[in-house]
Length: 362
Image (cartoon, rainbow, N blue to C red; front, side, top):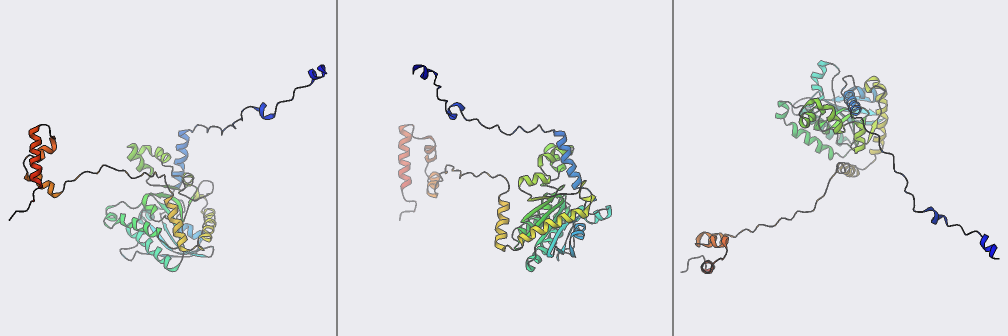
């Protein structure tokens, strides 16, 4: 019996006891180091593609993807600005009002269209078309491709800043669907003035930024030679803007850029615009406005701080200030305190005199 017990195997330990502490799964592998020179070159190539003069602009894209295009002119106040075009069109059976920046493919046309940089009358024309779309219940589709608003003195005299601000305000309150497409450059307030959309799309090689890379480099680096570094720092590519939540969808382009095959670019653009219009048009205007406002409130990082309580400064009343002026020694005693018996007695006398009525006794 003893031998049998001796040869009996001991019970094996439970799997939990033998396993020891739980193993932590390995994390993701570290990201490979970024080659700054390669990153600068890649981002700058996007900038150059967005600025390519042969890139299709608003009227060229509409000619390839829309039917019944009718352009309207003038702001009914000053004149017509060729840098912004707008009117009616039909995309996949849906009637729309289109608004967009228009550059030129040749030097003469670029000069006539001011290189796509609108004047105040251009933004006022856009607002007129927005109001027309709202009256007719038509969705608005905007095409953004500008380095910025025109900075010349004449534009400032005619109220450039006011026109941009009012256009942004108009779009935030527009009670019809708004789809915005960034087709090339989206520069500064000149772009944002017609880019407050329920959905913001961007072509693959488009850029969107608060200032041009050269302007940013001149301000922060003190030299425009650092434009490539500024372009990387601003995260202005369509992919970066999608990651930041500024853009909702990026539309692919043909190999080499949109200018290599404008027809394919227009087909892809038409399909995406029609899909978003089909989702937005049935929505009630109040729901559209609420979603639009919420979309832009969510942008950026905001830190909320509680109220800062500062000690309230004691302010003397009129009577106290009159006593300081009329009663000798009152201000000196208030500033120095009662340090001697003589000063204390003077203070008592001053106080008694100050408590007397200020009106003349009859």
